[in-house]
Length: 116
Image 1 (cartoon, helix red, strand yellow):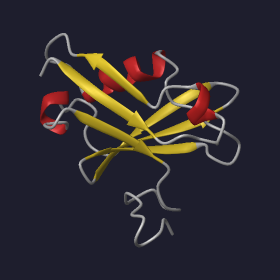
Image 2 (cartoon, rainbow, N blue to C red):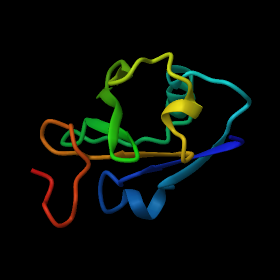
Image 3 (tube, helix red, strand yellow):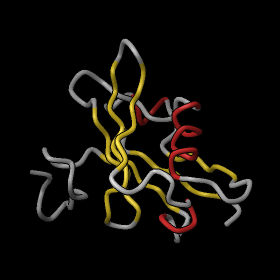
């Protein structure tokens, strides 16, 4: 896999007008999910607010990581699969989607069923 597309939901109306919602990251070779998430966080791609402080990363329809925002000390990943899983294994389609999931952050919201 030579590049991975990372997408995110906007945190507010102004966010989707001023900041990118898509990021393409080149994969230099074998890499762990933990290292890949660290690269995403180093680019300040994910945006947070006081009402949106946890965002969930999905591979297909499976949650694989949550990012918790602590506005004083930065962002903290919580891995839902082993952090040493290779990016190729957990993102076989080359896409990682960050969304504001339901209250328990365990499923990807569906416009037909809501995000409860």
